[in-house]
Length: 296
Image 1 (tube, rainbow, N blue to C red):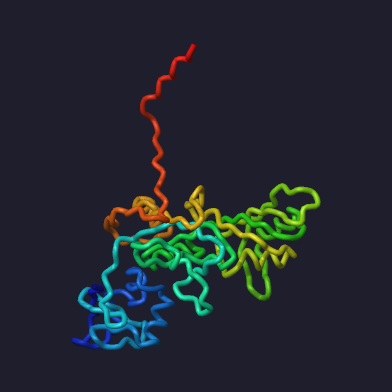
Image 2 (image 1 turned 120 degrees about the vertical axis):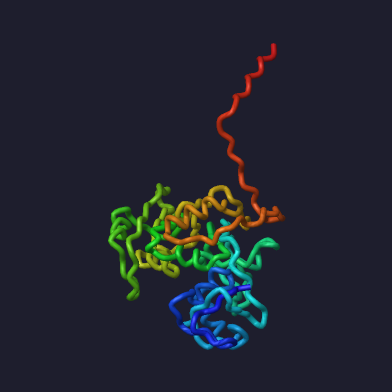
């Protein structure tokens, strides 16, 4: 369970801001319970308690002896940080619960995975690489523009455009009062007279529906959007709907890049269920096979 007692708490009382400990939203995010914003909603709904008392504010730091419970059930301590690559298909929303009843990414995942949250989102009609983690703190670190992680997309859009106009996006653009940072957009070769163009779009900010809104401002209507990479991770040949765990070594290197300390510990050995993608084993070096003699 999440064991933390903030200094200055009275026995059985609600936590108080203290010099030691960590904010409760941060602790629960790292334990994979919910994002920091979702933790605030859980508190507002009266679903979280600290040492048996209802929490009324997220402005609480907790320490090693505190007991936090969600819906009456003690929250487990944070597990080792884990990260997964998922090839999201079109027709799923990136949320745990959709008010409109549409199918979600998390309902489509294979069983026996830990509770995961997404690193950013892909909308209902978008597809491609979606990173998933059990550590809300890592998800937040990877989403922030300060991490410098570039998202790259392949985009098909209806309309006409020239490269010179796309190059203007490198200075950023304001659309409907929203300022978007520098975007690198490259026009792929297209057939003369074709109704659609293909683009490769790279950005480091990733605001809500950014690619679609920026291209619409250039009179391009996106009809297919595929995220092919996020930072150092590539979609590659991962099949649609499949999920693959990232190695713990790669997760630690990523944490160093975005200045985030991952929760240590060896994750459980993956059990390959239907829907899991087996990682490819790349062999290098070693003796070369002898060529077979040609048959006469």
